[in-house]
Length: 485
Image (cartoon, rainbow, N blue to C red):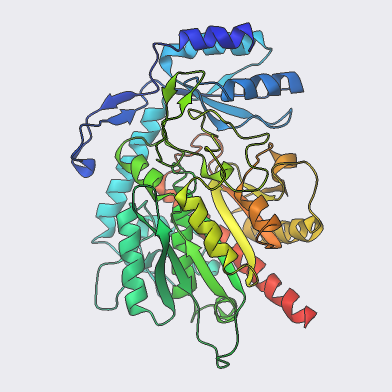
């Protein structure tokens, strides 16, 4: 450990990560815990120019420091974003500059963004209850959002889970875990080709809900190929669950509108998991907007901080090259891999689900934010998988379709070569163990001023453009299968 890191550790002994405040009525709980705020926390961006600087930043990330890396150290030339509490801001900036880095303030006050997001979410939710208009596709929409979307793509703004209920499930704001599960169950009860089931329970006992969308085949002996889409593994990345919900609405609402949607729903069994880390997701709504990991508890103490910390990074907990480079064995690290592979019930449940359908799943995507990247295996090594060329070309063509909607540009490449090493991640296991040829990790938009705290007004635009990419991939996988027959 360098003297600079030791100096930072000393400076952080009396520092807390965020300031607790009493929760408002929306998140009142029976416990005495208080919601964390991020008043005065800044996000700074720097671009390392050599591997020594990259390694120094990685060493900071692996320590028990109150630093939150929003964009991780990858290769030289790739920006790194760090959230820094006000209590250690001057010390951290000084150390960064001593290593030749030039940090620039990207976000001056994180709490301001959190408050703006929350107020917009509440305002949009209230507005959506009583003001709707009709879109060209025949869907009920919120008028304020309509102008932000290009109409040729049959955008969806709401979902009516039950034909007997006039209450629309609006897609233009972030929903709680209970709201999402309630909508899913209602939809499954009323739609002939939607079912919902739980594949297990989280550490705190919440159901791990998966939505299946399919249409019956005339050939009852036919076993359909499948597609698996999942989000919410990292709790604070709210745009992921919101986009999965958009996909559910687009597949259901546009089935009789878009012949390509009809084709892919008829051909595939669609499995969609909006929130794969429900404990963490709930925690971000109630207590800490920036929480990333699961909420499991362990008595294991972090050696460097001498305290026990909750949670495991579920995207470092898969049983493939577990605990190698790009993961941490320190419980207080945000990339803590856990005490063993599949220690997290959420990850173990997903693995069982996928292994039970491994011969049928042809496309699987793990949605995250932020960064606008469409990533292929591998994360644990810079070596490319055998199917990299096919994976890469499908992703390039799909992101071209995505770009046509709102001119959003995505980087395509393997995890290790595009951003950083990450061992024990989902898509490496999906590809190597479950044998899913087209396994991807997608970093949705958010890079820039908002990062993880993407305004609710961006949900539908991101959903529209991303669904075009998903639709293209599904059609291409379908064509590939036909050509092989």
